[in-house]
Structures are given as structure tokens and as C-alpha cells.
Length: 145
Image 1 (cartoon, rainbow, N blue to C red):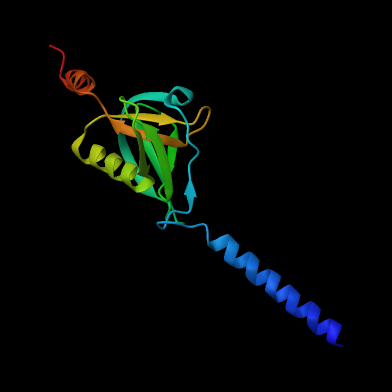
Image 2 (image 1 turned 30 degrees about the vertical axis):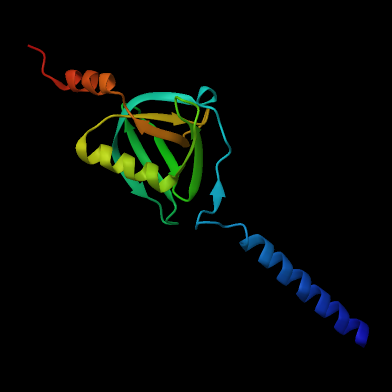
């Protein structure tokens, strides 16, 4: 009889320990960390402007249309992304930072540079376009005489 109670207690303790371990990995409210990927290993999809951004039902994944591409892209809001500046300094951004940058681009019609994981539609990195790229984009919008 006591052996049966000991088994129940050990199953309960193991289950409780597993539950604590699984939920203890969240820091800063972010569920996952994207692996560090060098920009040279990513696919640069070009200078683009979002034409729609929609939050999915689960609330942490955004789908978006990026002009001139016909396919749909997605970005996880609760991820932390790592990169390197031109002078070699390591930087980190949350997916929410990229979402805000994309929304601002959509509202103000300002192009962005977007990188995705190779052979996927998952956005890994978003950054502002250079002044030269913005000028080129604005020139393309002018009517031809």
C-alpha cells in the first residue's frame, strides 16, 4: 500500500518539475530566441514596402505582404533577433521592433531592406533603406513624361 503512495508522489513530483522547467525558459516575455545568423547567409529580398500587415489569431505571429513580391511573409513578434552593425558591434532586436518598423514603413510609404531565412517566407531581419535607395524608390514613383 505504501509503495503505491510513493509511486503517486514520485509521478507528481516529476510532473511538477517538468512543468517548472518548461515554463522557466521565458525571459523578458520572449518565448524564443532566433539563432544567430550572419546576413550573408540570409536571402535579401530587396527594397520593399509592406502593403498589408496582419496579426494572426494566436497573437504573436504577423503575416505581411511586401511589394513587389506576390507571396506572403511572416514574422514572429515574440522572438529576439541578433545582428552585427557595420562596425562589428553585436545588436539585438525584438520581433516587436521589426513589426513597428514595418508598420511605420506601410503608413509613410518608406522602403525597407528585408532579409529572410533561405528558401522560406520567414523574415529574419528588417532595416531602414539607405538614403540612396529611398531616393531611387521615390524616383520610380514619379510619372514618366
